[in-house]
View 1 (cartoon, rainbow, N blue to C red):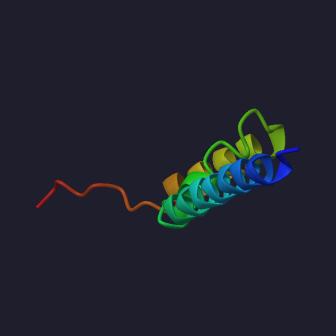
View 2: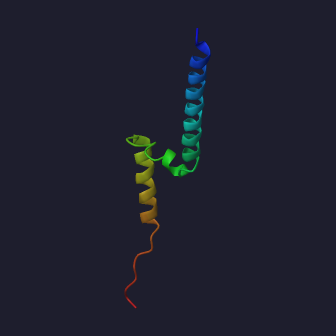
Length: 69
């Protein structure tokens, strides 16, 4: 019975799969960290409220343009 060649073939396939996973992991580590968070708060009412309040605060803190010089 030729189980050793079958085991060797399977081991080779596993080694290839591990190498592919290592390459994928290396590519993911070089990705921009911010990409992992984009869209996290999409369609989140509380976040939309925070954005609205922040915008209102920034606008209320602006100095009026003085063109009277």
